[in-house]
Length: 390
Image (tube, rainbow, N blue to C red):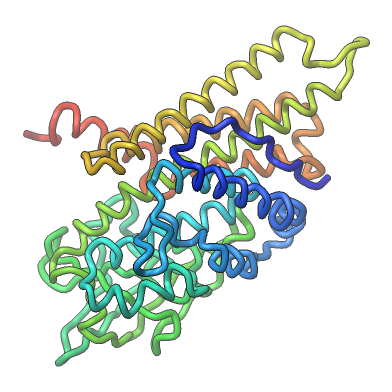
C-alpha cells in the first residue's frame, strides 16, 4: 500500500519565515514525495527531478549564506526540514543532508573567489553533490586513506578509489579528501572535483538492504586533473575540514533518523487504531499502548537532543560532543522504533504491502553512515575523559 502522509509534528520554530518554510516542505512532501516513495524505492529509482524541484524551491542550500544562493537558515530550522523530508522518504532527506555535507567544505573553508565562482550553482543552481572520504580499506579509520593528489605545475592529479559514496556516479560535484603529504591526518587535503572530470568513473551501485533508490557506489579517480584553485583550504588541512564537516553532517543524520522513526510511529498508530482483535482496536491493549508510549518518548528525546546540539552550533559554541550524542541516540532510536512498528503490525509489518518493513531496513544504515555508532561512543568518551592511551 502507498505510504501515509506524515502526521504534522507540533514544532517550536523561531520565526514566521521558518513556519512558512516547514509548511512548504510539508506540501512538497505530501504532493511530490510520499505518493511515489514506496514504488520508487522498490524499483531502485533515484528521484533526480525531486532534487531539481528542491533546488528551485531553495531547499538545497538552507544553512548557507544567501549571498551565494543559500537560505540563511539556522541549523535549528534546517534540521527540522530534513526530518520532514526523511519522514516522507529517506532517500530524499538523506540526499539533501549529503548534498549539504558536500557543500560545507567550500562554504566554510573556501576563499571568497572560490565561493563566488562555485557556491551559487551548488546551493541553488540544480547541482547535486557527493562527499568522498571513506575508502575500501579505510572507513572508520579515515586518516589512513590512500587516494593521492600529486602536484603537477598548477594542477593536482588525483588517483585512488573512494567507497560508500552516496550519489556516486550521479553527482555533479565531489568534495574529495586526498593525500598530498605525509601519512596520517596531517597529510590530507580537500578538493572540489567536477562530476564530469576526465578519469572520474563510478562502479556499479552497491546492492543494499535499504535505501535502494539512493545510489551508493565506489568512485574511481584515474589520474583526475584539477587546478590548484579547486583545492579547498590549506595543504594538509583536509582532515580537519573533514572532521568539521562530519560534526555538522551527523546532525543531519540525526534529524533524518527521527524523521524515519516518526513515520514508523505514525504508521503504527494508524494501524493500531484500525486493527481489531477480540472485539476491540488493538490500541486498547495495555501492552501495545506502552510500546507506543515508549516509541513516542524516544522520538521526542531524540528530537530535543539534535535541536539542542543545533542551537549550540547556531550560537557559535562547540557542539561536536553533542552531535555525536545526537547521532548515537537518534539512530539507535530509529532502529528500536521501526522494529517495534513492524511488531505492532504483526504479519503485515513483515510484508512490503506496508512501509514499516522498509523503515526498519532503512533505519539500520543510519547507525553506520558518517561514523558508526561505536565511533560516536569513542568521540563522546574522548570529550569526557580525554584521548585513549594518555
